[in-house]
Image (tube, rainbow, N blue to C red; front, side, top):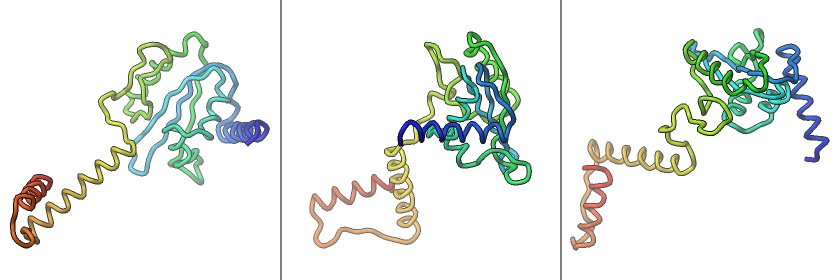
Length: 187
């Protein structure tokens, strides 16, 4: 993609944002995406930007966690998509963005929203995560979870329906493999 195509896509996203939510200035401020899911649970994502309209439009093109959620659930429309994301914008001075972002994150958390933010806000040193102890969900985590699920299924099968024994004449290797299997499925 060349720069003209990228620029055109960004302008189209900016138009989509203004068509959906009204005029949004390209000045500094805080923006908040909110949505309610099919079960009545409210979610929020709080962000800051020096150029609000430009940054909000980037969420429609990006691949961060919130960008993907916006792509999946869409933007709010009272006739077509009541479970999509709504947007609120608060104009703030550029120097106050870090502290204001933290304030809005705390506000929405206190109102009972499930936050989609990965950090407690701000761009400075010492930026901390909302849940630093939460494991990442990467490829290897998925493999490990799949392994655990398979072992649990095998365990249930052998507890309820199957027996296991050594094939042929027993020897030390076969006995070690049988014990390793018993340890793996915790029998």
